[in-house]
Image (tube, rainbow, N blue to C red; front, side, top):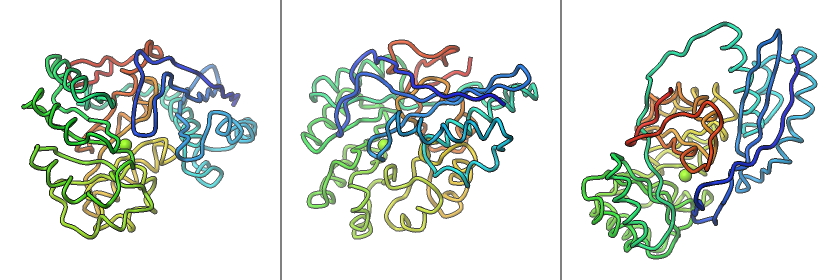
Length: 315
Ligand SMILES: [Mg+2]
């Protein structure tokens, strides 16, 4: 099997602003494998929050790529690479190759619901973005927030989108001091779910009060080994292939989370449609799907998924 990896940069159509800062392009690492005339492609998005960069992921991948030529199997990846984007890109490339080689035609739902993300902006601008999304048929809005103007921003979006479901992602930007009162106010504004309000290291505090709305672990939950720690602290977990290191652990994590009483969200990073196709089989298990990464790109990878009215269509 021949294999190579390379970095791609995809400019965004507009800045993606979250509590950690603004991005103007998606940087992904692509793995291509080829055997017997059949090509498989996998993609991952390294994340600085987890100490990853495109270069560090390429360095992790390179020794494995030559081992593929010597017969390294997909089932051996988990023992060779840590859970994370490098393993994910390789796992997805091999899964893609297997499916194509075996002529497996796509099965599963031809479309999935997805939230539409609203990035951090002034309350007025977020309200405007919310009403535009709702007018376009979106039913669930995911608000990115930092620690400032939280209630003003949410109230403005709520007023502009009275019928929409709202979920919030603070990306670890809040602190425990005012969290309880803030959660109560968000519940009054009928916010349906709050993702990762506190830094992952501060999860303990979440066990000290009754949550008036479900709280979802993202930065705090990468693989099944995290689940015992999250009990009594979170009601939901956000599964992403770039955290689990590929499809196998993502499916196992989703299944084990449900068994332990968590709800599941399926998430993505800033990515092309390739990464969303790879996560597709997990879609039907999730209470919320956050798959709108490709909608932020000025131009998507071919063949692009089609996003319309709060859904994503396979073709
Ligand atoms: Mg998140």
